[in-house]
Length: 180
Image (cartoon, rainbow, N blue to C red; front, side, top):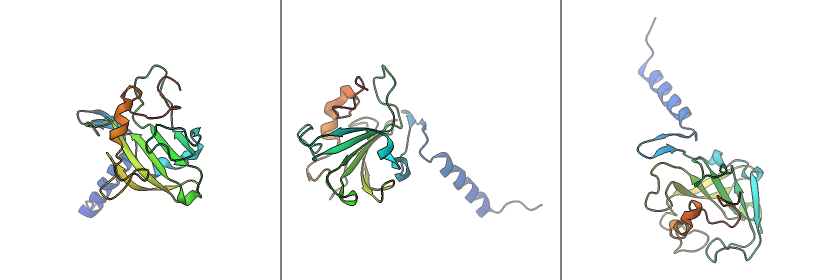
């Protein structure tokens, strides 16, 4: 019997490695459990628990984008002092056509990610592809050079969210550790 070729063996290792890392929480080096979100992680977000936010509500920053809906993929357990790794929050404006809506998200990536800002959280701008699917425009600790957050060229995510440390960096009147 012939031994598998290096190409076949390498493909098998790559395939198994990718399958193991497809958005499932895993142990992170030095920082605990981690979660890596992909575009598929946001599929069907409009079916998650939703929190309509009327126009004029917000904190006076880019969160005042007009009427919008905030979505949460899972609630924290009662008494939790932070959101669980793998928690996803999506904020979508609602007054435009689907393709023109502003869609932002924050994902509790966990570990040591974003240690100098909203610890454990990763920020996203998303683009609607259709009613169910989105693409990722950018992701990271804030928008990349040349990109804006909510139309504000000076805005970053951490600058405001660090002020909500008591709510695990989530800026929302409806999505709170104590109120869910």
